[in-house]
Amino acid sequence: MRHGNKWLRGSMTVEMSFLMPILLMLIMSCIFATFYFHDKNILAGAAYETAVVGSTKMREKDKIADSELKELFRERVGRKCILFAGSSAEIAIGKKDICVTASARKGRFAVSVMKKAAVTEPEEYIRNLRRLKEIGKGNGTKNHN
Image: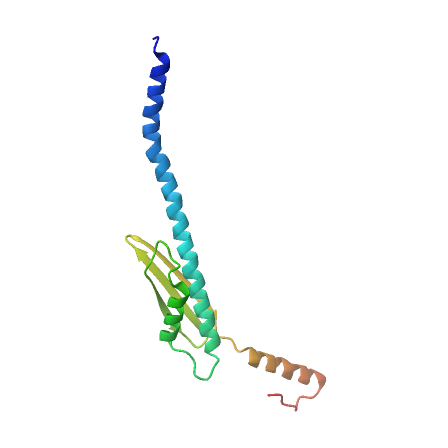
């Protein structure tokens, strides 16, 4: 019993040997979760930017091909992902919207995002508003193009 203090120090060592793996696992899990959400945000941002650029280009006379959009997506992602190094994108070009589905995989973990952007015609909308204003003023026969 005289060596009570030394026995207590020894029990602290045993308790810490049980606690340290749990603490290290929690720290590593937090780091992994941070990398996961970082990469998911990078993919989501790149997919959205690609969809918006595609919807803007669809208004042009030459339109845009999905291969151009895939290249644009690859440029946007670049080497920004930490955990999921290899990413890919599937692009669906419709008459009314552009849909970009981006995914990446590392081992048994995967991340996937889908972003859409509408193909808009703001010029046509503005022309229609001007026509309505003219009709409201009583000049319905005037044509603004």
